[in-house]
Amino acid sequence: MNHADLVTATAAYAAAKNAHDADAVAAAYASDGVYRSIGFGEPIQGHEALKGFYQALFTALPDYHGEFEGIAYGTDTAVAWGRFRGTIAADFLGLGAKIGRPVDIPVTFVCTFRDGLLLSDVGYFDVATFCEQTGIRLASLRPTIGGGFIPGYEAFWAAPDPDLVPQIGTEDLRSTWVGRPGEIVGINEYQDHIRDTTELIAGVQVEVIDFLAEDDVVFIEFVATGTVNGQPVRFTGLDRFHFRDGRVCDGLTMYDDSVIRRALEVGK
Image (tube, rainbow, N blue to C red; front, side, top):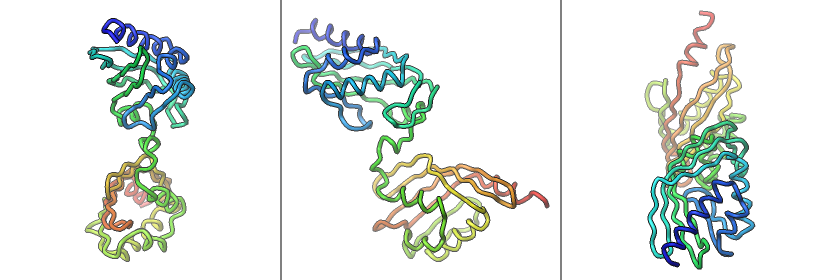
């Protein structure tokens, strides 16, 4: 593939995307061509799958526009960098994108051609930035992260039962909670603390906003609701858990406890 043909093919592919023409975008690929976003789901291969993906993209971002800030060419590869922009108008692939959110993402595409058609296009962009701007939970893009702990965490806090605590922690579990003096040491003390918490915050429920895990550490962003001293309360926080042999051995719970303290002051 000569340089002129490479420039022409790359420009035509970019123009088809900016024209929101899913048929033309898919036709730019070889029959075994693949699109892949690093850190974002599985590779998409084949004309029908590619067409469906780009139709979903252009539905979610009807004003999608990509703009190159620079481009470099090799023998059969073009590397383009710039930004893509748009406004979320519909959900994207069932991931929970928030309608009305503006998107402006720095991105680099590495496009490899064969006989004038795309063999692969690999997009590199910061997934955390994408999730922050679209409102998509990072966990939705990486559902295997965190193993089986997150469903259990959600089930526990949907209907808290302190008697279940020994099933999730090691005997020597250590934990620190904001607003509570000293460290919690041992599974029995942790169980007592959870019992005290469920009594203090009547009807407490915790919903996972997002989570991320690596190796034996899990971070969970949450929102909690309940009633304290007859007053409805709502607060956000962060849990960090270390695991050993599948059980929590160390924890840190951080949240704004002023919400609870203010509720306790009512009527005094």
